[in-house]
Amino acid sequence: MPLAPSFAAMLMTEDGVRIDAAHTPSRGAAELGIVLAHGFTGSLRERPTRRIAHVLSGFGGVVSFDFRGHGRSGGESTVGDLEILDLDAAVRHTRMIGYTRVAVVGFSMGAAVAVRHAGWHGQDGASGESAPRPGRPDAVVAVSAPARWYYRETRPMRQVHWAIEQPLGRWAARVGKRTRIRKGVWDPVPSAPHEAAAHISPTPLLVVHGDADDFFPLDHAHQIYGAAREPKELWIEPGYGHAESAATPALIRRIGEWVAAGP
Image (cartoon, rainbow, N blue to C red; front, side, top):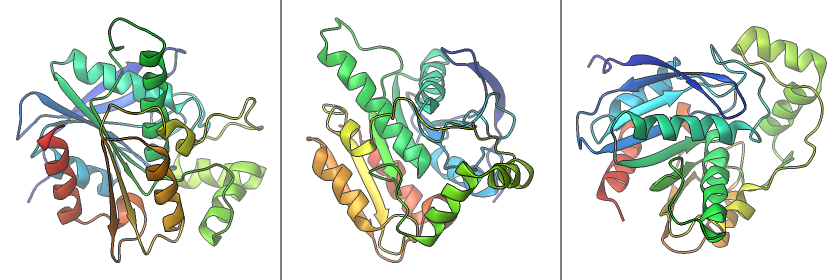
């Protein structure tokens, strides 16, 4: 089956970074927009991401984008910190083009950003704003998300940290994966996903994690889920590995059905 056509867009973040994006029109509910947030070193142009966008477009329109420092987007990757501004621009764009209900589906780093972004807006709402900001999502799905930063207990994550922290690693990521990573350390350290999860409610949260994930073991999913308040769901998927590359069409359809069902 051919992949659904998509239409290019260029977004601008609040801090002035150009974000490359694409809109796959809905083959399902006309009012539902789904923002697709890829993992570290991923891209909207990679085939796993495009296939996920195609499946999700059966439930609503899909806006996929490249985080800063990835692909054709500007800037440098901060590996989960300032990326909340990229996601915010994508959610706002999704509303601007006419979708009245917007869900975010994130994978790995994109899942951590999705949780942090929704928690950021949740804190805004708690501070007494009279109306939600346009960037606030109506639902969040976090697939293969890390719960905390600086995790190095698995071999793949030690390799990720090498790519982030070492000059040779950053060069390899730039040449091999078109990912430009900012030098230096976070200052200040951003809130961890499990901390942000406490502020997402009343936005519904779905946490999805595989029991064969070789990057982040299941305790990450349980930590995020345990910190979040209702409404929330936790799916532990037998045999599922990590993020986009391991996601089956059947799992993505189930996620699409959950999003389309609404609160």
